[in-house]
Length: 206
Image (cartoon, rainbow, N blue to C red; front, side, top):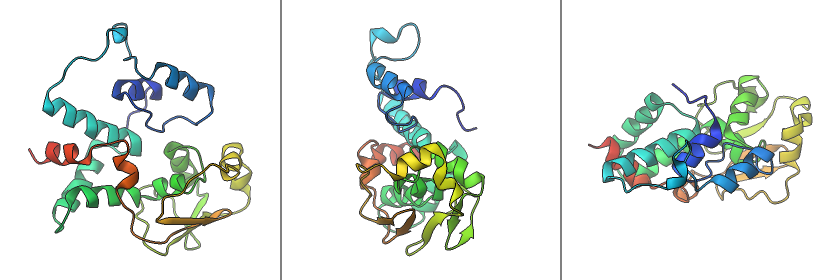
């Protein structure tokens, strides 16, 4: 099942900002202040030394929470990746990056992947001029991602995101106004800034 509890709690448990809260919000500021404190009444005692298997599990959970996928979905992505010849970790990252909800988020159309899933589920996003309501839809090179009409761009958090001048796009994406495009195959560079992909592969390869 997808986690639906307090988002700050899981970010604090993993010890990193997983992008689950809107940057600049009060909740996000509160998270940053307490990021190094574990949740629960004994959190202030700090983190205990953990086993290699536990570290692998934590990296896997971080990826799940960050991309908003459940265990079954992530394992399926791994199984598809391991069947290909080459770097399994790279292929796993590529599948996650090509998800429509992730692309909408990476393009800066909205502040979080959760809000991207909401936009997609409500029929506000088009791929190549066709409305797509499946967040896990795999985007291909040269696909065009846009809003279904002008009205979604007037939603408060969408309008604010589109006006964000500090937004830095991955090199495999381009955006002009409220229209984006996947111009090349995604890399694992962005994911590897937060997650050790090798640990996830080792976890599933046991």
